[in-house]
Length: 156
Image 1 (spheres, rainbow, N blue to C red):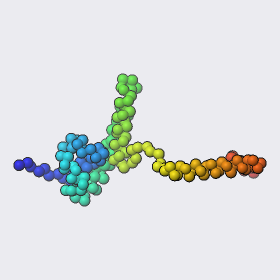
Image 2: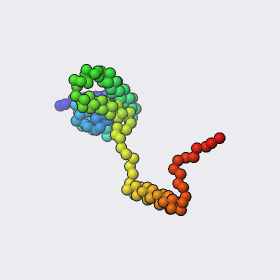
Image 3: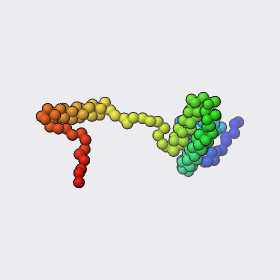
Image 4: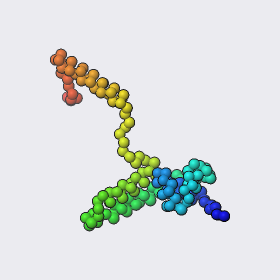
């Protein structure tokens, strides 16, 4: 019969933090932590973990983020003009990007750049408002009114 391994809350927290870094990739996390995939799945679902584990995970996130940040600094400090000439720039950029992404993920910061979500209805409304202002300016110009687009300077 197989033996069941006992894990401390600290070990569970480390594994769950690594799972987060790996964006839910149970297989990759299992290989990196030597914790079976099914065990990771149970822990991620809250089975077999004490409430203290989530607090420990927060601390582990910070520690892992600090390690990634230190890795970024070491990586950048190690880049010399000679190494840049010899290295594939794509590889250097990819390494820096991965370290940065993992650090930001652990600090619960955005890891992607996205445009603010705007619906088609919002776009249409904004366009209609712009068109209305343009029509008003055209009417004012036809009536001989001057449209001043520059702010007036105050004189003493």
